[in-house]
Figure: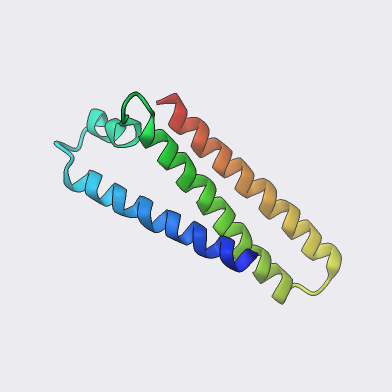
Length: 107
């Protein structure tokens, strides 16, 4: 299941990267209003920019969790140390993703 989740999150991140690239290339100028429009565009009153960015941030956190968790499981042998690293990694990734999503929805 983790293999599939890693691939799905990678595809989501690749698609979002292409959306950002198109947005950068079609941006009218490099000012705050243009930057804000890159993340807050709508489609038929649906906040598509914010939803896509939030999905990308959550996918990034999930993708990172799977990768880092596998590193801890492969290279850290003491169970207590591994557990502490797992908890720290989870708290850190959830905090970063939550902060990023919250910042996006405040724009």
